[in-house]
Amino acid sequence: MVSTLSRVLAAFFAAFSINAHSEPSFEPIDPTKMVLKNTRALDDNTEYQLYTHPVGEPGSNKYVRPDAPPNAPFKTALIVPRDPPDDASLRVSVYFDGFTTNAKRFPTPDFVSPGYAVIKTHHGHYPNLKAYASKSGVKPYDWGGFAKGDSNGWRFGSGFVKLSEIMPSAIDWDAGLRLEGKSWGGTTAILQSLLIKGPAVQSAVTIVNSNIPNTLFVRKDTTPGDNIDQNGMYYMDPSAVQYAWDDPTNVITGDIIANADKLKGVYYAVFGNSQDQVTKFDLEFFTLFCEAKKIACMGAWRGGDHNFPDTGLVESRDRSSSVGLPAFMSSPYGPSGPFSGPDSDSRLDKILPVFTNSTANFFSSTPGKPGFVRGHYNLGLEWNSSTQPTPTANKLTLPIRYRKHTGFGTGSRYAWGEERGPDKNKANWIPDQPDSATFDLTLRRTGDFSLPLGKEVCYTLPAQGKNPKQSGSATVTVADEITITALTLDTSTTYSDFELNAKTSSCME
Image (cartoon, rainbow, N blue to C red):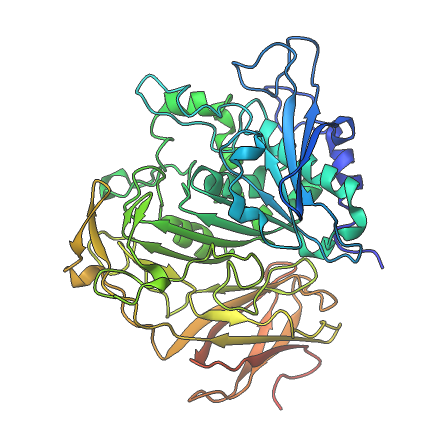
């Protein structure tokens, strides 16, 4: 049986003849010309492989940083299992961060989990954290966006293709492609979910797991008088953007809000700090992107600065000075990592639910009101991927539930990266979640249960808790997705089977 993602390679190579932008013009990177230069064992289970790729005539390499020596190739490193399984059980994970391809500098926690391969990319244009500051002193790096044309996107895409070439029988293709990172790498993961090359590889992205990122790097400030920085940190400084990205006119191409239609199959887990002074954690990511564009997301934010969040997290039992929000970047990686529940997952061969308008969210984009300093989005809303029946032409079933979270704690006050004791402002505290949640549910990747424009369906959510049976009809207004509004679930550890049926005559029993 041909998997959903097994067609990626042909489409990827076909994309080499396509230039995403008229200027500047670069030849895309061809993974078939990547040369293995170095291999060594990192431990008993993992191996480091360094690949190089010559691009252009001598002295004209357009894919390496400006201070590279003549004829320097770009580099892509793979961390792979030394003895990969031959049973299609290997799930591919691409890891982005800001370090160069040096095996000694890999963040080791990302490679201890069995069953994962990690593509480590040389970060192209501005990997030197002490260089390339703008005239105002800002050091924008490249944030994984447009540096040297589409260099980053081609690197990451070609690295994935190289991985599929060396161990095709071991890859679980339907697991898709996970982009993950922290800080600079978290920003890159968000950006590259849109920019990664080629089109088939981009469409294979299933999960973005991003910790303390700059959430809306290219967001313009539409309301500059509200004291909310909607720009991210660097769009305000044109010279910084010019240093970061070769062609600032490409900014709109990297705007995830403007291009949200390309990201409908991606699930985003985004975790950050509202007082971050290094990367700007714009809360509008959740309202203008996740909510308004109906993108699958879960997230949370704490008080504190970039590397000084509210202490304790879920490990602390002292709630007087900590905040008990979940750590979505937990290890080992797997379905329980970037989701609210342990049974949820985002795969190319599974239904993708999108929760919006949840009454269990704790969120506000207004300073001083509850949720601005600390909050959460779609926490407690879960689905069971493992027991999800395969959709048929006439019926779709998705097990869903709501589990309330309590005992978050007060959190700490922070100033200039230092903890200043418990936060006594109750407006900044996180209350317990409510006993029930009302939400809208959008379904995508529905398999054989097709959703052409104009199709009518019947929906049913059985009686649960204090809620009677909920049922009715809905019409497909956007092809390949359906939205059911105002569903309600009481908190429970048991899943309820939400069901769609093709409408024949009437949805009434």
